[in-house]
Length: 210
Image (tube, rainbow, N blue to C red):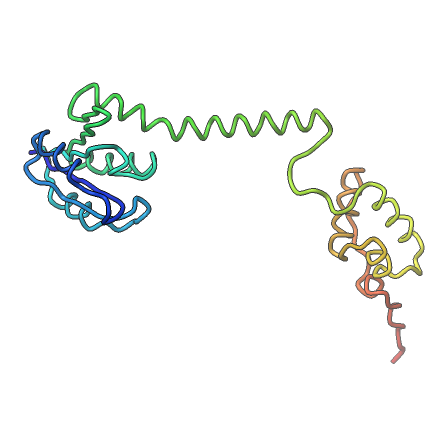
């Protein structure tokens, strides 16, 4: 049994073209929606999915009537296929009840994975090209090599409060320590952290005897 589904986005548009094509294709019943393709809930589509049974074929005038994106289209056709229901698109001349139609659908199913692989390959190639030019990916550094050297020189004076250092460089305390530790790690040293009392610009509290 052929079951049709038609959709238009607004009430100003007519369903006649789609309904005529579906009736000519042999659909015994047609469900309709007046809703944007971006609308998740469609009463007509839900009713059509509830109505079709194993051995039936859901027919649409064009692919985009069933799904707004390739991912959504594949998911819905797969859901029908798992229930033993065929899918047919009149404009694209695809019918999953035929061997040729099933082949086309399976090719469609590989496209998202292929697209992800292409994007990943391009990203890795772009990063490699950037590294070759001396650039690295990720967020730009807030402190450059000159600022790090200045910070290390100022901190060499044990009387210099850390607050004065990061304020002079216009960065936060966390940013200062993050870049200093990263510089130490890059040099093969172990990252360290100055005592909190000195980091706040205060002298250590003197010890008192009992």
